[in-house]
Image 1 (cartoon, rainbow, N blue to C red):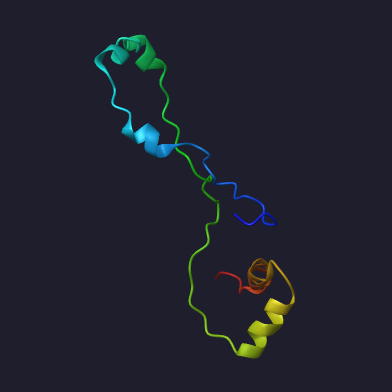
Image 2: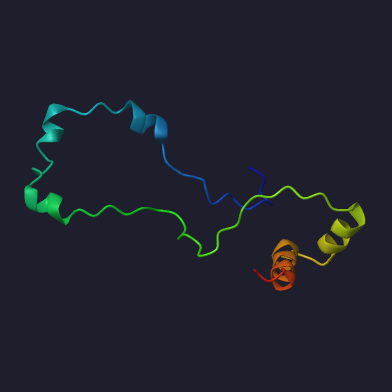
Length: 95
């Protein structure tokens, strides 16, 4: 690894080959506690990920002039969010 470059956060720093090569011996199973109904009743299923948005975004294909897109991109990071905010403010009223 390059000495000037910081190490990736995803580096595991573990010996996966050695862990994969380990064969579980029958006596290792004796160390495991028995699963009881009480243990299972305390189990909770947690769904990972981000919470659902109240107004989720949808993918849209929109053709704009290159000059318009260049001006938006030149306005800096967050240009898509700013564009969406302006479109939401200028949207026609529902009938």
